[in-house]
Length: 115
Image (cartoon, rainbow, N blue to C red; front, side, top):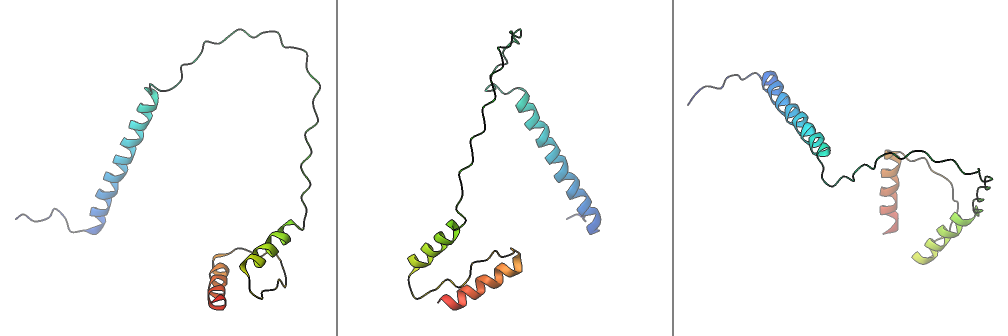
């Protein structure tokens, strides 16, 4: 048996990171090379001479966005509560900030009170 070249963890880490990044850079070059010689890429058509532009058509008005009923979300939530069944009542519907800790607290609260 032979002795290891080094036992210093920092040198071992540097060697390993160098190998990993060298392999990743090599893979990126291989991917770029494959994109250059890709046989499935559509052939480029030769550029045509520009033709005379037709007379500009009048700009059409953008279609109006459909009117959204502000009570639609409330109706959907009420339908979901009714489909769930039971004696549940909707007391308030309000937007809630979405942060990780609040979501975990809500999930724990729902899990503890529903069952």
